[in-house]
Amino acid sequence: MHAWRSRKLALWLASALAGTALALAAWSAWQAWRAAQQPPARPLIVAVATQLGSGALYVAQEQKLFERYGLRIKLRPFVLGREALQSVLNGNSDLAVLADTPLALALLRGEALTVLATLYESTTAMAVVARTDRGIQHGQDLAGKRIGTAHGTNGQYFLERYLDELGLGLSAVRVVDLAPEQFLTALETGAVDAVTLWYPDRARLAQRLPHATFTLQPRQPFVYRFVLAGRPATVRAEEASLRLLLQALRDANEAIRAEPDQAQAQIAQSNGLDPAALGPAFQPGDYVLSMQPSLLTALQDQADWARARGLVPERPRPDFRASLDPRLLASVAPAAASLPPPH
Image 1 (cartoon, one colour):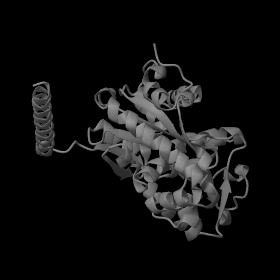
Image 2: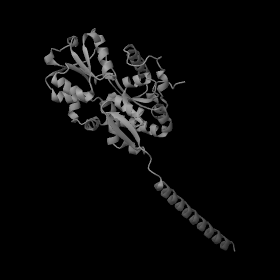
Image 3: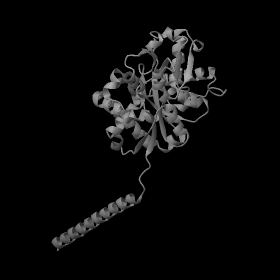
């Protein structure tokens, strides 16, 4: 009798377990079917400047690091970070990779933006490149010359800082506002005597005028800095995805340092260049993921410059600190975020 009851109990348990397994299988199948009926998640659109400052995103894309974190990222290229930012302000992109100068100008105009991290810092990327046949071999030789730059960019800010260091000032030169696609042609044709240039355009110019130009840089290092920023509402709505995005960029920086030749080739290809053309401009250590007090200082300095030059409407200087949010970065790379969260 006892043995019969034991067999009956065993059969009941087996039947129950089988039923449970079937129920779980059915539930899983239903969940998979339901997920298949849902439209795929909208990709995050990141507007990038086609410059070295966007290199970590190119590497992450080429090495499929976004997919590793289940992200759908679409990179939308622009020649300037200023244009990438405008894409965000127009509602056509979710995030922008841009230099700190157009960021400072936008904040001064009253735009609401949140900065998630600094992505790139270089002290060698930016320079004044001049025609040697115009008698320019030293910084002082720029006096009386026509210098092309793009207004409202870090190129303009760099040029004016350099002229101040030389003791020349704006009155000693003629500054010509150029679109980025005009830089190389204007210098080639002699429409200007010099231009402010960064990579990859410096590499392209070296290929087109290999013996006709001279590169000038200030004694005081100029930090060519790129950041990742978006609208506050986007940051709030996409917080989980943005945390994963920062993890992917952290991995990209590690890949750049671990395999620099491969990364250089990927960044050069994304900018339409032969890897050798980047030469010493490619420095793995320039690719950083950080939120440092130096970014706040840079924004404040550029704001003072822009207000003094009348580049923005007259209004009190905003609290830039309120636009720098290190929380997501600190959750991914605590040591990289030395700027305390805003109050």
